[in-house]
Amino acid sequence: MKGTLFVVSGPSGVGKTSIINSIIDKIDNVVFSVSCTTRPPRPGEVDGVDYFFVTEEKFLEMVQNSEFLEWAKVHGNLYGTPKKFVFENIDKGNKIILDIDVQGALQVKKNYDDAVFIFVAPPSYQVLKDRLLKRGTESPEALLKRLNNAKWELSKMIEFDYLIVNDDLEKSIQIMKSIIIGESYRTKRVLTEELIKNLFKGVSDR
Amino acid sequence: MKGTLFVVSGPSGVGKTSIINSIIDKIDNVVFSVSCTTRPPRPGEVDGVDYFFVTEEKFLEMVQNSEFLEWAKVHGNLYGTPKKFVFENIDKGNKIILDIDVQGALQVKKNYDDAVFIFVAPPSYQVLKDRLLKRGTESPEALLKRLNNAKWELSKMIEFDYLIVNDDLEKSIQIMKSIIIGESYRTKRVLTEELIKNLFKGVSDR
Image 1 (cartoon, rainbow over the protein chains, first blue to last red):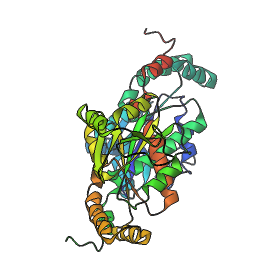
Image 2: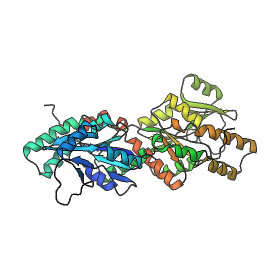
Image 3: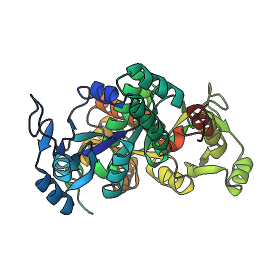
Image 4: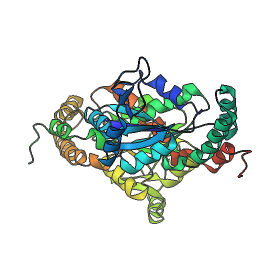
């Protein structure tokens, strides 16, 4: 059985990371996508586990060689999703989860539309606003930017294959789990040459 | 949320009906498709529950008016899946399960490709043969016909969206359940005008 890339996206504050973290040990063969970054490692971070840490020179070389499914500059550092890691895990039959903002998800879609795109939406824009205000971790300017960005992001949900309205975390976890398991049984992923061989073993053509 | 038609098919003896019967009370809003037939009701059968019982004249009129998703003649009686029942339940947001042979499923696909097509396969042709032999309910002629038919049916699995190899009933039930719940959250089914209205309530365009 071939693996699958699941791209999970939505506005920040919508709760997508909580959903993903809860399903990771409920499904077999699930791995998180590991990004490349030019940001220096923080204490305790392990290369190849938290990130692949690379120099800016190496990163730009990888960009030139189309080695990323998507990449972006954030606060002066470069971040990207390497194709190699994703495709190697697909060959191993793994389910790879990529937790990413909407802009990044749409970039992935352009480069690899065999992935499964899942949008997590808030019950309403107002609920999202309240959640972000309650967090209280940001400057008013950053908060306003996030809220404005959220409007644009919500307008892009139509581009995604699946839509989960996160009004109940437990329910959303169940839905995400069902989508990931269900999608793994798409005929195009299950039907390998080996399966056909096993199926028709000993059958004559007469 | 809009409902969905799930067409579940596969060779006879593969165990698809056992799988379906086990999930029916594990998922909300699931209904079985009710067929039309010209066969007379058996004792205890209720019109509109087990079948819609109609005269041959009425059935042929419905065929002429394209009122069936598929229909066929079996042992001299006519059977068909009425669009009206299916579409009314889709409007109600229900998940409709249609348990049907492969030929019928392919007819449905021609008429309504927004349905989800699930193929249940045996682990191998040999296992299917053994199961049918063990049943021992048929004449040798009928058995041979079924086995020959199964070869043709297996060759059609590629036409289906999902493929479940039924080598473990409990596992197959879990997969079927995941497919049915997951597919219900496709963006095209979730994203209604009402949802958009709720989402953006109170948001100004400035």
